[in-house]
Image (cartoon, rainbow, N blue to C red; front, side):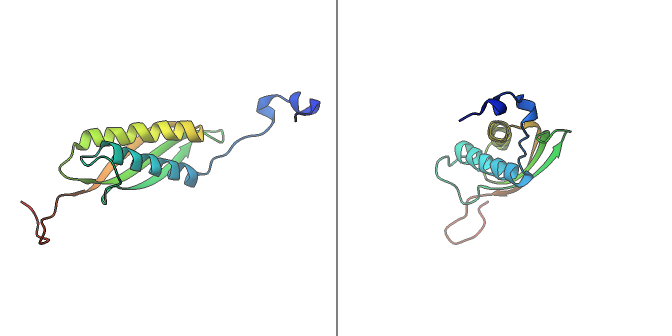
Length: 126
């Protein structure tokens, strides 16, 4: 129930929302995992190598500011590296903007490892 006094205060004067960097990082990590599940060569259930590490930095004078997100991923090989990285960038930007209310200035994706198929005896496939 809204009191008459509360409704007379302008929206900007009521307070501010602050989303912690670790929360933004968790949102970005989940988005990166979703993107890897959806765009990988074995799309569907989470693959063993679909891992992501995320770091977030924030720039701007207000509490929300602009996020710069760095995502490191391991991918299965063979794969379309460019399209998977593009999907990770798109999904991370979309999720952080929608869920945290922050604009995302940059999403940098680096591929830390490519994991190829293993033969049944554990030797490397050539």
